[in-house]
Length: 244
Image 1 (cartoon, one colour):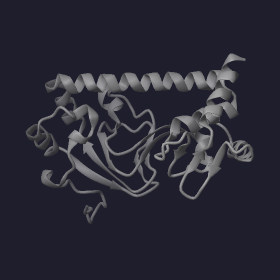
Image 2 (cartoon, rainbow, N blue to C red):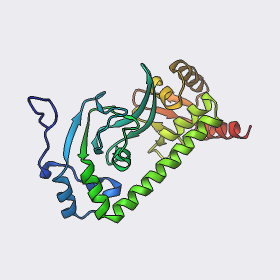
Image 3 (cartoon, rainbow, N blue to C red):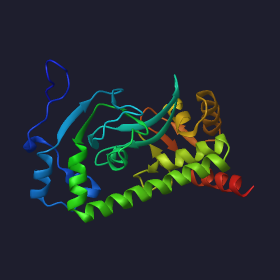
Image 4 (spheres, rainbow, N blue to C red):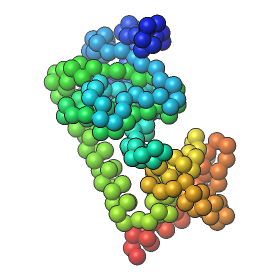
């Protein structure tokens, strides 16, 4: 994608070169014609790894769909201190809260890797919601799912100590390995600083616990993944912590 030579900002792309909105679950019911019509009022933006998409308390109202790469929502408390609220990949929608409640951004959005997003102007997004009740319902269902996930995170912070929050996060971020076994993997692997941001702990604390899990042969780190060798045991430890 080309950038404006004067400002460096990305130029809108013709609708024919834009990815489809229908790749996002809430827009799956759009017809191809509707998709093209709405895309004609949108544009794309490319981001380099580490580049900010929007900042906390920014007053912009655009909504974004991730087309390539990964974008993360974070809250920064001070220099070097931040909490990861969520990670978004291809087909995920983000930034919709500011468009709905007309308030400042509640978190910063930053590209974890090189990424491309479709930018839906606020008025376009609201027009779609007004005209397509199925899209509005799908959005409500998505927001409900996110509220439930946030409640789970709050419960985790309230009832689990640091090491059990780490176990829970490893399980939550992992997926079943494709070899039919019981192992789960996190790929690409997160560094300890990132895991610490997920659970609200220091990198040193995470490093010590990950080393202990490796010695117990519960976790293995490779160049491509964090491998959970015995996820059942991690779940069992969490259950015991909640019961005790």
